Image 1 (cartoon, each protein chain N blue to C red):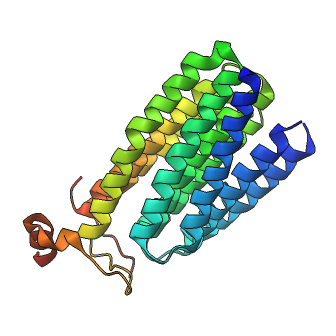
Image 2: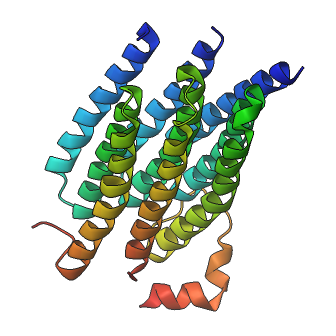
Image 3: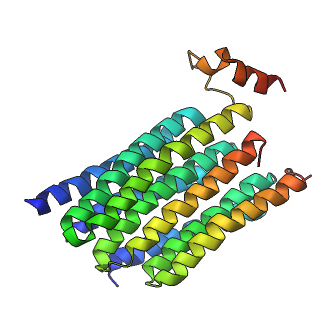
Length: 83
Length: 83
Length: 113
C-alpha cells in the first residue's frame, strides 16, 4: 500500500511541468518543460510496472526515454537554425 | 482498477484536452508542434495505464518521435509564423 | 534489508522529481528552469529505477539499462536545448549578474548574424 504516496508525488510533478508547458511564454520554455516531463514520466512508468507486476512493461519505459530524446534533439536543432 | 489509477487517468485526459486547445489556437507553429507532441506523449501513458503495452510502444515511437521530426522539416521548408 | 533500501531509494527519487517540477514551475528564466529541470530529474529518475530493481532482483538488469540510458541522454538533450535557446536570442533574466558565454567568439558571432 505504500506505493500510493510515491505515485501521487510523481503525478503531482507531472502536473506542474504540464502547467508550465501549457502557459510558458516562449517556445524554449515549453520545450524545457516537455524534456523534464518525459524524464519524470519514465520514472512513473517504471513505478507503475511495479504496481501492475508485469515485467514486459519495463520495455515501454525504455522506448519512451529513447524516442522523447529524439524529439527533444530535433526541436533543439531546429531552434539553432540547423536540421 | 483502483481509484488512484482512475484519478491519474482523469488528470491526464484533462491535460490532453488543454493541449489540443493550445495546438489549435497557437500562432507560432513551433508551439503548436510542441503541444501536439505533448498530446501524443500523454496518450502513450494513457494507453499504458489501460494495459495495452503494444499500442503504447507504437504510439510513443511513431507519434512522439517521428511525426514531430517530420512536422519540423515541414515548417523548416515553409514558414514558422502564421500571419 | 534490500526491501528497505529499495523503498528508501524510491521515496528519495520521488521527492527529487517533485522538487525538479517545482523548480520548473517557479523559476523566472529559461536557463534557471533548465538547470532545475535537468539535474533534479536525472537524480530522481536514476534513484527510482534502481530502487524498483532492488525490490524485484530479477528486474535489476533492465532497470539498470534504463538508468544508464537516462544518465547518458539527459545531459546531451539539456546541453543541446541550452545552446539552441542561447543562440536563438532568448533573453536572460534581468537580475542575472554574469554571462560567460558572451566572452567566447562562437556565441558572439552567432548573435551578430
